Length: 158
Image 1: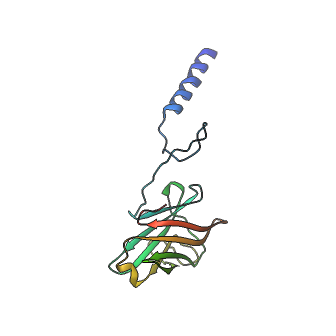
Image 2: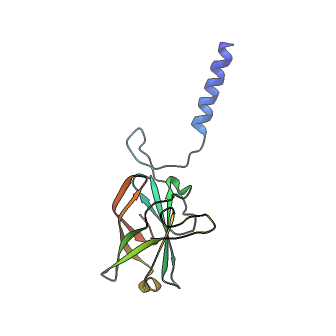
Image 3: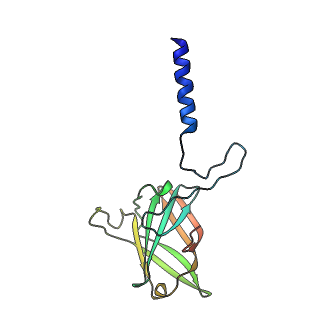
């Protein structure tokens, strides 16, 4: 009986070691990090906050000059609602600084509203023609943790 239990435990350990992971970017025992990538759910630009704690996804509609931002969990696995009414991103476009103010969006399908939403949007005329720009998230607090001065490139991400 003891032998069967040992074989069972060894089989479980072997199976767990062979199970595929998501390929997270974490430190391995040797201290080297390996990279991973998760696809933004709307096909937009992903921006990592902290050590994969959260993500932002930016989706540009160049025809209208509107850009949406979605707050996502680690691995972009789900949406994270915030109490924030807005947040700012400073973009550098053709050598000049432009401020985008992302305001909370109401979504009747999900019941989200300003003060309890994962969706934000900003609008600017220059977004109709600017396809590439460098940007900086000024500050955003998610579940008590503040993310300050987060640089990224659009549409590449960070």
